[in-house]
Image (tube, rainbow, N blue to C red; front, side, top):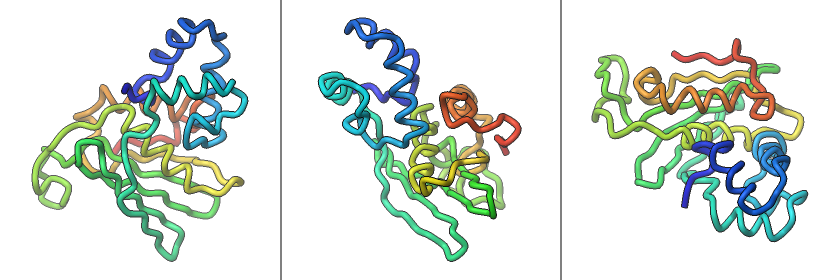
Length: 191
């Protein structure tokens, strides 16, 4: 089953058109994912029930599972995610006054071998897909209260972001799109 978050527009628009659905339906799905924080197609109540069922049968929203969720006294929350192939990555939500910053990763392991970093001790396992990167952002957003919104993205978790640029750039585009997470490009840092 294809992971919808790998390329939402490229997958969804033609699929909807084949079923005689208006182009506006793709916008509705985007709103549910990025703004209304839906966890599954069944929650997208402005879509007909039949369409929600078809979407659930055709596309996978989540390819990872939360293996561990920890929270520090300062409000920082960390998710350990298990990927479909068993690999694991961590992502973090940092709360600082009005800022809601997320730190995401781009690889399982790292091939750079920097002596100060534990991420590369076992080398690089693989690059994350665009969908797996977007999924980190959406899962961290789900930790926010209804009055909170993400304000910053920092790409400095596990792996070397520039070594997975082909998957990272489309994911960051989803972060900065108005119909995505709506985060200003000036508030997105690749480290």
